[in-house]
Each structure stands twice: as C-alpha cells, then as structure tokens.
Length: 371
Image 1 (cartoon, helix red, strand yellow):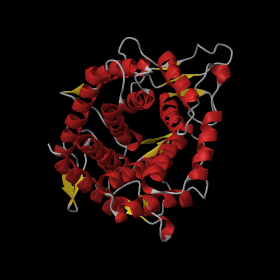
Image 2 (tube, helix red, strand yellow):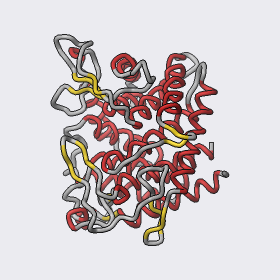
Image 3 (cartoon, helix red, strand yellow):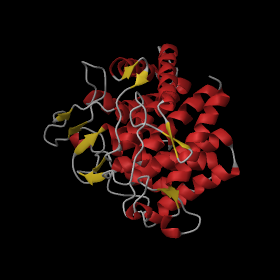
Image 4 (cartoon, one colour):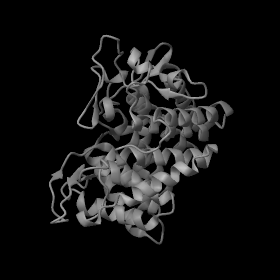
C-alpha cells in the first residue's frame, strides 16, 4: 500500500478522535483534552476523571499527525492539547507516577522539536525528576509510583527513551541494562512486567511475569534510541526481542489481544516503537530486525483498519485488532480506576485509549511507509 493511502487512513483516524472525543477543558478557550469515553457522560465532559497518561499519548499522536500533514490546524491541535493538559493538571507537569511523567516527557519533547511548543521548563522538571528517581540501593531502576518500591518496565522503558533524548545517555544505558538484567524472561525472550525492589538483597525480589505488549515496545524503543554501529549490543537485543514478539504476540504478523482501559494503549505503543526500530535500528542483525518489525507494523495496522466500523460517520477502532469493532452505547458500564490502573469499559471501544491506540497504529504505518 502506498504512503498516500496510509496517510489518508491516519487522517481518518485523527478526524474520528478529534470529532468524537476532544473538548475544551472546563470551557476554557485554547485548550483541548480527550474525554475518556464516547458517548461521554457529564463527568467525562467535565474531565472529573481525565487519565493523565492517556492524554500524553493523545498529544504524542497529534505530533505524529503534524509531522504527517504540516497543517497549521494540526499544529494548533498539538498546542491546545498541551495547554489543556497543563490546565487540567493545575499548572504542574508532575504527578505521583513515574511512568505517567515519562510518557508526558516524550510527548512534550516531540511537540517542542516538531511543532515549536515552548516546553523547556516542563522538560527540565521531568528530566530531573526521572533522573533522580533512580534507586541504586535496590539494584537500580525507577519505581512505578513515586512512593513505593515496585520497579517496572512501563516506567523504566519510556523514562530511558526520554532521558536519552534529553542527553542523559549514561542513565539511558543503565536503564537498558537494568531491563534486560532484571526483567528479561529467558524462556520466552520477552520482558516481564516488573519486580518488587529489595534494599537488603538488590538482585532479589518478586517478579511479576505478565507479558504486556507495551513493555516490549518501550524496551525495543530504548534499544533503537541507543543503537549505532558503535553500540552493537542494542541491535542484538532488539533483534531478539522483536523475534520474541513475532513468535509469542502475533498471529500472521498481526499483534493479538487487546482490551480497553489502560490496555487500550498497549498495542499502539508496541507498534509505535516497532516502527521507530524499523527506521532507526543500527548495528549487527539490524537489517533482519528492521524487516521483521516492518512486517508486524504493516500487518497489524492493516488488520486494525479492516476491523473498524463506522460511528457518526467516522471510523471506530476495535480494542482487539483481530476482530471487528463493537459499537458502544451509553448504557455500557464505564471504565473505572482501581489499584493504580484504569479497567476497561463494558464495551472497550468506548474508551479513548482504544481509539488513540488505533490512531497510533495508522500514524506508525504512515510514517514507516513515507520513510
């Protein structure tokens, strides 16, 4: 498929999310955020619950759209989402979760680099917060929450990528080493979710063996960020992890599984960083790894597109790219927050996360096709 056709699909995904989900924050002009669900409840429209990290990915994918089309209206979209996030977070950039802040750092850095957003102060705050979050007494890594000692891939992976982009390469290298030392499952070749830190025995702790797609994505993304002909370890690591994803997480090169709530973003994150690796990975084994990553990106995005249905004249993505989307309704039980995570709506397609994840897949395929 041509890059023109992928660009058209990405534009259709953008229009769907913008028209169904985006609203000014508390009616304040010049701000936008995505309502957590569609159809939206009154609480959704008032952003009583707003899901900081979902909005970070909304900003990041809006930057993708601006890179794709260069339109002044899309740049305005980027700036308004960034302003909406700042307003809704009460003019702070930090919160209680290191993974949330890492995602926001990645989005703000790209918004500044590509769309001219003035986010230098916020980026410095996030850079220093995440750099200082390292826990050497527990064997390294950063914690998921700012309080506690659960160290996981969803915090360390994006923090490592962000710190590399902010010039903290030594810590990014330490983070990559930590991920493979503490969280690599030798049987499957995939990255486990996390580990409980232990000050007394830093290399010992309860492993959480869940294999989530986004954990593979951010680890691959960190390898791609650090890879070069002079740093061959990262290409070797990424090649092994991409092969493990192909074996254990795809069917016919299509990423399997999917859910709503926080899980609605997992596969989109994996496909984003597979597309990054397909373009940027350097070193031994890189050519085959890039080819395999490209295959997964295009097959998954194709499946995601063919699983869409029409709602209000716009595409609606399925939570699971191996099946067709289901149309949500106002009577469906909404997503809910528990234990630090957002659980799926009764019909996952109702959740903003699912629709942003589908948009991410289209933008990833479009960017890869253009390259």
